[in-house]
Length: 75
Image (cartoon, helix red, strand yellow):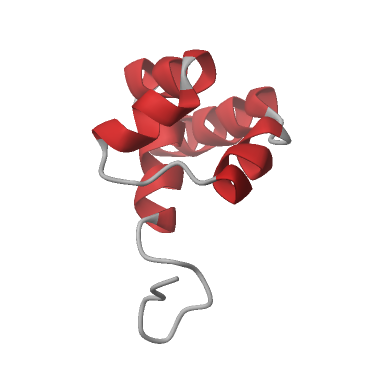
């Protein structure tokens, strides 16, 4: 696993989270076909990643993204 300098998270993690939170089309693809969506952004869909994704509360992530948009007056 490659980790960003000064971070405990693997490279690509922050990009994945941001893209899933703020790109509705990607979020839908990630929900419908996680392996293909991950490959589309250059992340190899390992069993560990797919298992972790299957346990995420997608509605909570959408609510969090909306809260940030509300603060900036985007929504």
